[in-house]
Length: 348
View 1: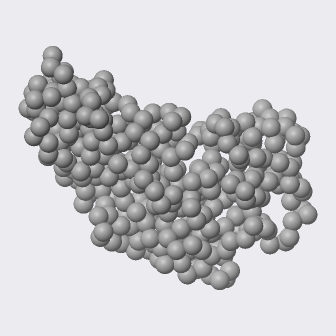
View 2 (view 1 turned 60 degrees about the vertical axis):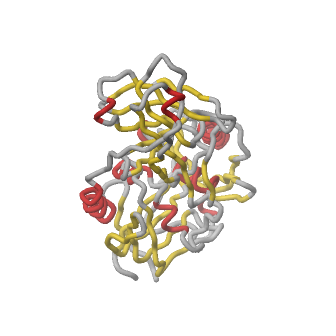
View 3 (view 1 turned 45 degrees about the vertical axis):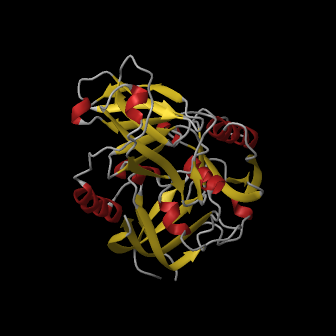
């Protein structure tokens, strides 16, 4: 029996998102445990989706299609801008549980229908299929994790087919807080720009990258020199690709308003490849300029004028609290308790 270990759980629709969007989801793949931690919804709330990454030197783990769970454990490191901040022996645990409403009838047909509806409501049209699997008692004795038992109402397990691969899942009734779908949110610590979206096609590990851009030609287009331009892009390590555009929903982008734009009427401009200007209406909330878009590129926040507008540039504002956040974030990821973290033991 090994030492007591702390594990970060990924379950429910966050786990469905992980299996759907990860190019290499098995935790034995290089880098997969660190990527999977980004899918822990409670941890993402604590860090506000900050553009940090996680690495793990796996010392132990377990993964097999016959199991109701998988995990990886080892030395976990938090990275920011290429620098490592702290290390601790921790792990990530993929808990194959999907929650359904308490009002669901106690039949396997009703369970399948309720689970399929939750997945469809979250993913939209997709190829994820829920079906009855069998009784839990019929599984191999080591299929369940004895250190983290899951109590079901009906004693059954269910199959969920994702991208051609079938996983065994518990389906259990959950409280309203368990039924909330995950929302993508990310923050760039240098600029303090944030992005959120309800679109389920976005991998939950996606990081926002921001560069300040100088474009002196924009002044004539927008009729003012009171502007700032950012090049905003998203990248998912799990998908191994940039996230350039979504079709099912919109991104909400929040940009800190520079002092020189305070109390001004604001607009955001996007310049297309053809050189045309695209306007995005701005709402100011708590000193943040908020707008929506379905794709990412260079965006210019500017004072609204009567002239035609659009351009790109960068924001001199920096996030002075980076080191403070890293210190707090290290405490958080290495010491979170409650639903995110649990203590358990495993055979090594």
